[in-house]
Length: 270
Ligand code: C2E
Ligand code: CA
Ligand code: CA
Image (cartoon, rainbow, N blue to C red):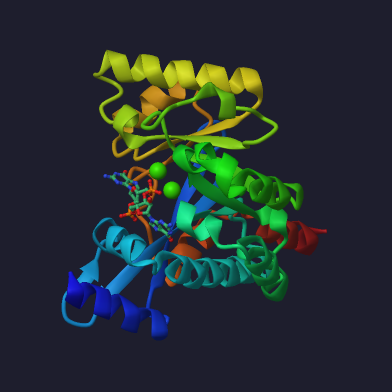
């Protein structure tokens, strides 16, 4: 643990954390609705260390705000390049933890990063777990989130269903999208309870005008069930794995509608 702590410090000073990207697609028309940035750490001796292993240590030692800023600025810079190149990616989604949001200048950092990179705030969303919003009253996080959202950044409740699933925050005035946790998506075609839960959350969100993305769909059978239920969007290995930026760019480019080519073709016929 001491060694890991030390190595995290070094990785921060070298800005060694990388960003992988995992697309989210619409289940109705297959268009790309978003792409989630996920931190990756290629340790010089141990190889890839998963966020599940180093994030808890980084949170405990107070390093998460710095790691988060490295990831967020790298992700925003990449998305700004896609945006300039006319590559469709929907919205870039970044994960933000409570300790990151509690930094007094988090909103200023975010706006400055967007502005410097030249990415419109409308092309960004923040994925936040429910507990962060719930512990707000003392910390002023809600006011900060309102400020960020007023600038056009979308807000999403991550891992929905695993925490309090408090309905007071499932409010279109506060939240733009719910991410249904993978545990409810897994084996949804066989597990009647899961399919009832996903159906209920989907209907609730639709009634309120909030969009829904199901996380962690791994199989064709799970995709079919989500589609039958009427879930809006999906993210998972069945669509694409998290990819480094060059592979993500290839993936996004390959999915682009071939309109431009068609236009050239028509032009040459005319
Ligand atoms: P999360 O935000 O719920 O991210 C989704 C996780 O599910 C990712 O794990 C992703 O690789 C994985 N996943 C996606 N599709 C599938 C699938 O079909 N099947 C399975 N089994 N897994 C799938 P990852 O990248 O290991 O990240 C774990 C968690 O670490 C994230 O969970 C998030 O809570 C946190 N995290 C990752 N990157 C960041 C970051 O930049 N900042 C912060 N604050 N947290 C991060
Ligand atoms: Ca997430
Ligand atoms: Ca999640």
